[in-house]
Amino acid sequence: MLRQQMMEGQKITTTKVVAPHMIGMEIFMFLLLALIIVAVVLTCYYLYKNRDKLKSNSNSINSSDKKDTSTNDNMTALEILNRKFVNGEITEEEYLRKKELITK
Image 1 (cartoon, helix red, strand yellow):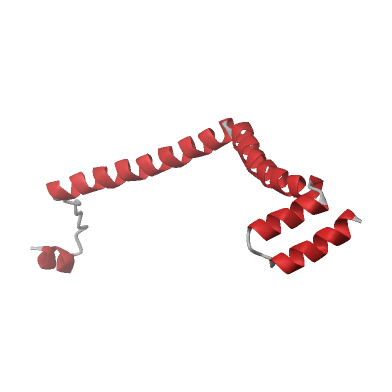
Image 2 (cartoon, one colour):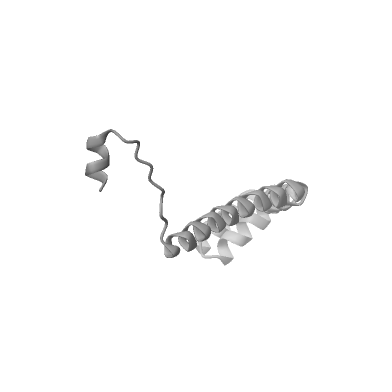
């Protein structure tokens, strides 16, 4: 019939027929895309809202690292020598020789 209409020069109109299972898939894809967009927006909102807390947490981590190094700076040479000897980093002979040099 289409061939006959084409040969006669009649205008052919067609309608798109969508299978019912395809409609469900289109709805699912739309909902999935909407869910992803909502998740991205909520994540950005949470990070923006809590940016001060996140900065203070990172600063406290960095400051705790600095505290460890500052305590080493405040230690006397004898305390450092004692620590090295206790940890086994130097021998007893080195410890006694260096202790004598420090206490002079």
